[in-house]
Amino acid sequence: MKISHIEHLGIAVNSIEEALPYYENVLGLKCYNIEVVEDQKVRTAFLKVGETKIELLEPTSPESTIAKFIENKGQGIHHLAFCVEDGVANALAEVEAAGLRLIDKAPRGGAEGLHIAFLHPKSTQGVLTELCED
Ligand code: ZN
Image 1 (cartoon, rainbow, N blue to C red):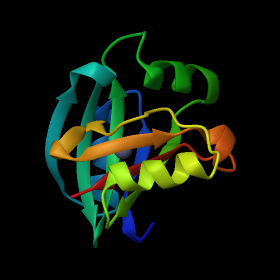
Image 2: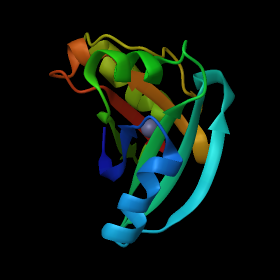
Image 3: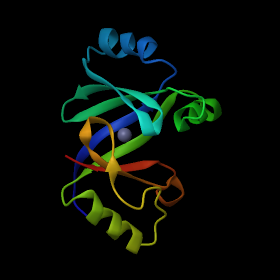
Image 4: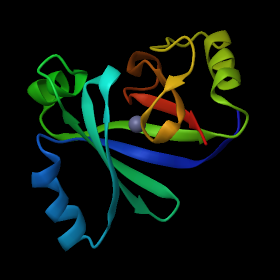
């Protein structure tokens, strides 16, 4: 596969409202979009850092995987998302052929209308990895 850049870093937070003043007032970044992703039970806030984004993830339900992540590990970096040039479906086929464990067998819709798929951290050296395309 061909990765063009890091699309975003996903960061689990208890509250977007509590986290944003740090990113906006201290780091000087600007939140340009807040969106609920129903099927992932999260609210997301996006900030741009050059070509890369920071995606703040706030759980909207105690059953959210983000709620469980924060419960186990606390707030912090949750996943790394790469932008693939030849499409998520092709990249997934490649990764599966290489014997890696997938969380998503097929691309699905994520925040910002991106097609995304997650790879299992057991197969990616401990980092929950997301593939996406523009
Ligand atoms: Zn993400």
